[in-house]
Structure formats: structure tokens, C-alpha cells
Image (cartoon, rainbow, N blue to C red; front, side, top):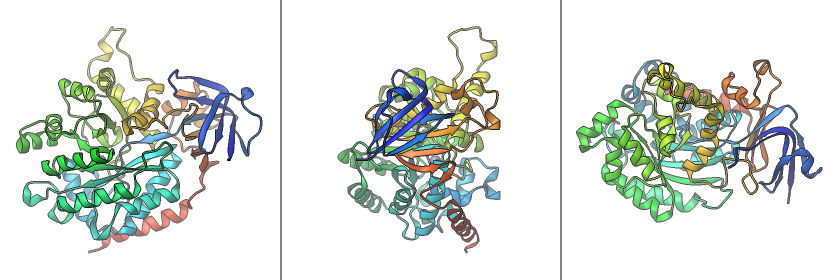
Length: 460
Ligand SMILES: [Zn+2]
């Protein structure tokens, strides 16, 4: 039995009552929260005590879409100024050279960046397994860094010779994909509260996977009670591809292959019509909104406010580090707020006198990155600070130049320049302390990663 006491912080609970507690604290026992209240109402001692005077404490941020391996191919000149399909066809041949140790070091890099940005739980979507690479390689990296991982076993089965986008060299047979999917579920998936690893099945996208594999993956996932994830309606190109190939728009195609339900979440979902938003709401599907990636690749702006109004669970994703070029989840919260306002502007907000038409607030944006993430991943034990939840949180010291003159401590961290956090705590254990990673050596990780990235680019 170990206990941890957090004192004197501004606590943002994101609980059902949206409580905020100035001079508040947490009492934690064995990795779970036992009490959230004013500091004076908490026990006065514990095995470890952390005074967080002048700090804002948020529930740990939850990242619901990423491709860790892409940290190795950031800002490649030929892919800097391209739309999704051109960007992908430029990068597929490089990704075909990935080795198992590249998967490990890129995962450590992305996880370290995420931890420094306040993230405590992350999904990752790995859909290429060249040269003996396995999902196990990134699970090992998450174990070392100490974040909770929803490892999505991705796949591609529709190569260029069959009308798909990826070259045949990076696709696998359905049989091999399903066999390995079953292996990782049986070996790693933990459905219990406090789980550090869960497995997700995640065929990559409509333009890289056959309809049969979509259906078979859904059957296998439901047999084991694991979630399903894929890219959907990311670009207008993809909508045209689906219409040509399967005679349906992306959401209709998902209905055809039985990919709707509360166990399914989609990355992006930018190009949807009103009736498709209603389909996602009716079936309780989740959406991982990735605003930076959508801006970077000129994909468009997801209708997040319309999703929220319809009751769709929306979360945030930094997306792969080659379509964002960073893994900063707090920056994603800020971009979600800003791009939602751009969308309002494009639809006549400034001319509207309708008082019911409101802009996304800082607290709503933070809710996407916390509660929203937990809902989309199907986790009851994370996403807010409340009795019985996992002791996952981040803390930001508000005594900084960039926060002076801010009149609202919560809005400060969203409206202000995104900062690295001072503390990231997972299950009561410090991953980041006083602004530094404590579980891995950030400099060593960066050095190894830099070497791997150079080798990958210049290997022939
Ligand atoms: Zn993606």
C-alpha cells in the first residue's frame, strides 16, 4: 500500500459536475484516487507529499490517434507540401525499410513527447510490419516510458496491384493479419480497470484494406471484446475512392461492413454529411479529431461542433508525427479550439445574431482531450479526477512569462502558447517531474532516434 498526497493546486476535475477546486488536492492510494477536495479536507500526511502551489492540475490528457513510427520521417522535403494521397505514396517506400528497433525507438520518442505535453494515455495505430517488426516492439517502449497504451494492431491488405493505394511490398495477407491480431489480443489485452495495455484491431483505411478483412477484423474484435479503429472520411479523395470502389460514401461503407457501434472509433471523419453525423451518433461511434494533421495536409475541418450537438463522442489525436511533425497533445487542444472557431467564421458566425450560437470554450476543448478521450476508448477509469479513477494527471506551473496577465488559470493553458508540463503522473507514479522525464533519458532517446532516422532515409 503506497499513498501520495497532492496539495494546494488549482484542481480541474472534469468530473460530472465540472468542479474546479482552488487550493485543492488529491489523495491517492495504490495508483487510484481516493479523495479529491480542498487541501484542508484531505489527510495531512502520506508516503509521498507533493505541494503544487501555483500549479494547475488537469486529468491526464488522452491521445486517441497516432502513428509513433512516423517520428522517423518528419518534415521530409518531398512530403512537406502534399495532400494525403501524395504524402502517403511518397512515404510508403521509406516506411518499408523500418526495422523492429526503429519501431521501438520511434515509439519511445513519441511517448516521451506526449508525456511532456501532459498525456497519460495514448492510442497508437501501427499498420506496417516490415522486416520482422511487431506490435510488441511499441508495447515494450510504452512499458519503459510508463504511459497507458491502446496499441492498435493495424493492417493493410489491398495493394496497388489490386486497386489500393500502398505498394504491394507493404501489404500482408488477411490470414497472417488475423493470426497475429489474435496473438496480440491473447497475449496483451487487459480489460480491467487500471489497465496499462489494451489491444485494438485497426485495418488502416478504405483505400488500403479489403472489405472482407474489415468484416473479419470486426468479428474477431467482438469475439474478444476489443475496440475497432480506422481512418475514415479524412479527405475528399477518399470519398471519391469509396464511391468508385464500393459504390458508397465512407460512412455507408462502414455500415455495410458492420463497422458501427460503441466499440468503433474513427480518425478524422472530416468529409461527412449531416445524415452521416446522425448515423455515427445513433450507433455511438467515436471520432478522433486531429486538427493539426487536417490543417497540415489541407484535408479540411471536421464538423466537431455538429458532432457534439448530435451527441457523438469526440476526442483528440495528434495523428502521426509525419503529418503533424510533433506529438504535443496540449497544442492539439489549442488547435481544436482555434480551428472550431475558424469553421464558425466560415459559416457566417460574425453575421449571426443568434444567441444560441456559441464558440467552443477552453473548458470544452480540454474536455475533448480528457473525458472525450476516455469515452472514445471505452474507459470508465480515466478522463477525470474523481474517487475511484486512475491517479493520472498533469500539472502546469502558472508562474511563467507566457501566463502573466492571464485572468483565468484554466483558459491560460489553452489560449496561451502551449507549454510542456511540469508533472505527468500515471497510476500515482511520476513520468515527468519538475519538467523532466524521469523514466527514460530524453537526450539518449533523441540521439538514438536521430541515428535511426538518418539511416532510414539514406538506406538503399
Ligand atoms: Zn492517421
